[in-house]
Amino acid sequence: MSSDPLGASLAETVRLARAERSLSVAGLADRSGVSRAMITKIERGDAQPTAVLLGRLSAALGLTLSQLVARAEGDAGRLRPRASQPTWADPETGYVRRAVTAAGEPIEVVEVSMPGGASVGYDAAAYFRHHVLWVLAGRLDVTEGAQHHRLATGDCLTLGPPARCTYANPTSRTTRYAVLLAARP
Image (cartoon, rainbow, N blue to C red; front, top):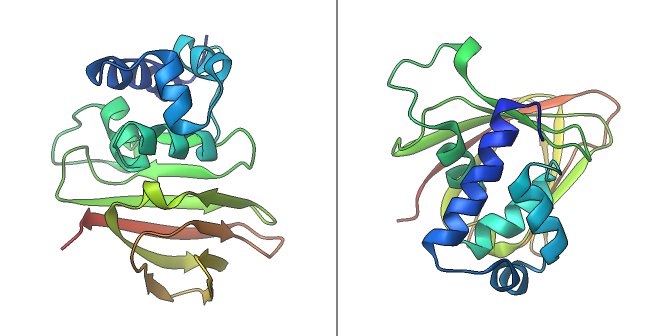
């Protein structure tokens, strides 16, 4: 079982979201392209899912990655001291996601710390909310469909229509950026 409280909660959240949609493990595997064995391990808490796997599962469940993680975080109220903001680390890349705002807010704010050399990609299905990226420190290369964007500290990018995106830190230092999400107009 996962020793990370958010990891354990994510396992249960994936299982409940699948059950709410009357999906079998095989059905979720077909929709997401994630193997049945891996889904079973994730739901049992025997495997810590990567950001890419969570992105595929959330899209197949009709949720954004942020919505899936927000469900796992539970209701934290309006005041969210930094010490109580849940974090989740991608075991593959070391990418760390911190939920700044509480679940259910009309605007979600997430802070990401991406180690040097790390890269994470998400399918277009993960982008059915409006995304704005704001680099707080460092550099971030974003490939959005066929477009390439190079962002530096202070730069802000509003993503266009849903497209496969890759976020990469081409430097040797950690990059920090904020992701602001809202319902698409």
